[in-house]
Length: 143
Image (cartoon, rainbow, N blue to C red; front, side, top):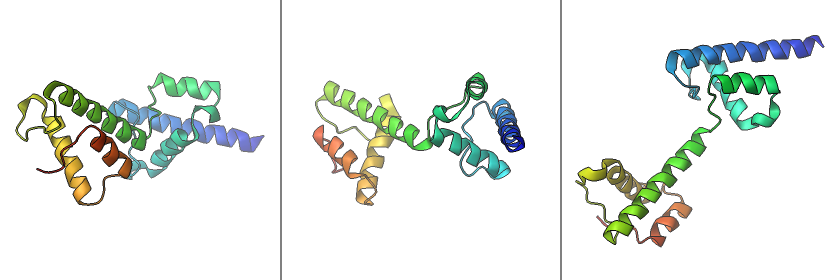
């Protein structure tokens, strides 16, 4: 039993550190390489990877109370990519092609994203499934 109490105390200590971080920064997205408190960073990473199922109702209640962000960095990155892909598809529906002009003031974020995809392909860093998705909608790889 004492071991369990120690584990609970450690959880509460980590939670308090996260609560203070949230108050100071405004969110619970502690960077994985958070130099100020590497223990907190790895604890938050573990929370996300283990998921809600690994927690008690009280722990879940506390985390939800401070707006804990369950989404991993990888999931956020994937969701952001998919959102930009949808914006490109909307551009294609409107204009009949995927050639977003480099100086298109209407959506500079889309312009940057399109050129980033091209540079990722040139460097060999664009995942094959993304290249295929872009090819399916007639993405123009040439400048």
